[in-house]
Length: 196
Image (cartoon, rainbow, N blue to C red; front, side, top):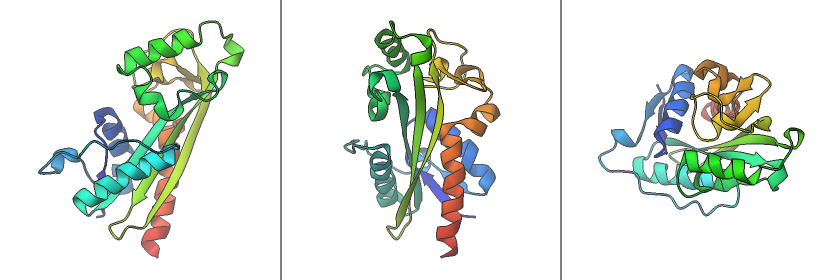
């Protein structure tokens, strides 16, 4: 069984990545399996892919294992793609404050112009330093107020054809989410690399 280290300090993201990776047959390890905490990675990249690679390289250096890291966020078209790579630190005060700030920024924007899409970039770094990245997207729109208490981040504000992320079950969300899509592509790419 291939051991995979998930390089994240975000417990909710860790749970979601583990939930999607384990059925593929990977033995998943996280920061809690280490003797020392993973250092904070400064996200100095200008794209989701660059930031995911920074985190994955940090995890590989720490563990020597095949390492997977994710960088994700929401891009709102009426805001020129913001908050984008700054999604997690948009307000500087966590999910609820981020959601409140986004709603405030969009308060005069009509429903039809509240289009947005979630992005997840997954980086994989092998013990020998080879690496690749994949991307998944999920398109929808931003609601006028939060719905449901499932998911995390901007999920209670994100409406898709299948419903609001804040109200979907884990299985429903994984089927259509940016991270679910990215990880399915990741599995195909990883299989190619492992065959080489």
